[in-house]
Image 1 (spheres, rainbow, N blue to C red):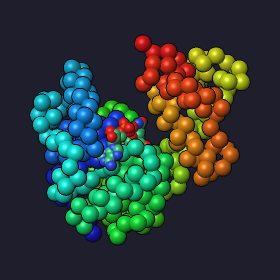
Image 2: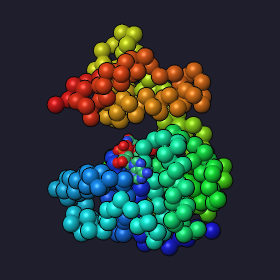
Image 3: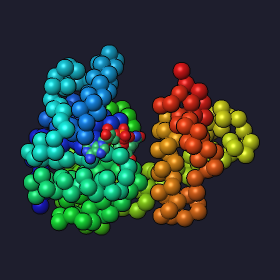
Length: 284
Ligand SMILES: NC(=O)c1ccc[n+]([C@@H]2O[C@H](COP(=O)([O-])OP(=O)(O)OC[C@H]3O[C@@H](n4cnc5c(N)ncnc54)[C@H](O)[C@@H]3O)[C@@H](O)[C@H]2O)c1
């Protein structure tokens, strides 16, 4: 059984995705508790939320006032503050052991009928939930970055996830103004399974001199109607994030997912894309 009356949503992790999920939930009228491990990470999360709300409001893309949305979000470092949430979404770093610990904590603190969702991009929902007493209420709710802008959410169904939990995951995403699709708990789900080899092939094509970086991106943008070519998109996602996802897929699915050599070299050099000012392109 999962409770279907949702008033208060917990978000674990106040980073890029957690702060975005908290913001979107509060924008849609939910009370939100956003938890991170250190007060400064919670503050960084609020800074990101405030900046995003201001930008949306300035373009008339926000229902309501930024201050009213912000006030619906409570920040905390205390796990027990999640004890009265009706649903929790985990968005901590992409590490299986860390996520398993977070879910063990959530199981201890949340009521038995609370849906526990993970925003993982590539890790197995089944493995994240495998040590829990109630793995049937764990589901993947894979928001896209930036959460406030991207319409899609991938619902991922683990081995033990019940139909009821899956249905609630679709419904809550719908309530947050998103459109869902569903994937079985197989490495990379739909999105990263297809996206990561595409990005790696773009990087290999560049490394092998098929075309300039601009022409590789232009070829894919103009030739196949995607909004960003592989090199520009990799810079946007973060080259470290792409490498980590590719390595997970390589481990699970074999050599067709081998990360491109140049991707590894750029990450080793600390050029991680937009966030460090340099990746395949330079940023100010
Ligand atoms: N960034 C993306 O483009 C993107 C897109 C889709 C999904 N994801 C997934 O979302 C998740 C989060 O990614 P992100 O980019 O927001 O990472 P991030 O590094 O920006 O944020 C992670 C946050 O989790 C916090 N944290 C770590 N352990 C914690 C704990 N035990 N309790 C509470 N907070 C804890 C960290 O302090 C950090 O603030 C990952 O699983 C990632 O794969 C990321």
